[in-house]
Length: 143
Image 1 (tube, rainbow, N blue to C red):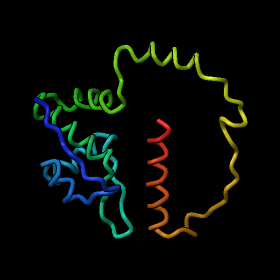
Image 2: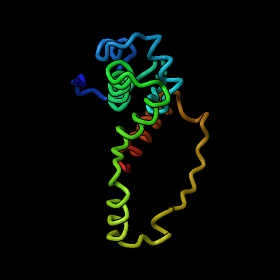
Image 3: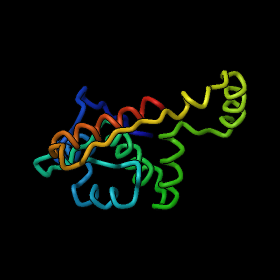
């Protein structure tokens, strides 16, 4: 039986909070970060790893795959990607139908040219972290 995890309504979690929520030891979590691209914490300006709810969902799903379903690392990588991306066998037919129904997007709107010349040095570490968080959230919204 799959364990369900209730994630508190917060935007970011510290390592010890994630370990407490998921029941995964810090050394195991560090290993999983190196093996699974779906777990991608950011480093705060104070040097702490910060996890978003998407990371926690991936960790909980991975824990179930490895410990309950008894999958090996390679099998878990494939299954985790499928589950988090919502892939199913019949998705390709649905995607083709959806693409056919979408209107054509003009090239000028599809790839807007932005001429931003901002130096990374001009931004503080905290600002860079906020931009990275915003970028990740925008990617999530787009997908």
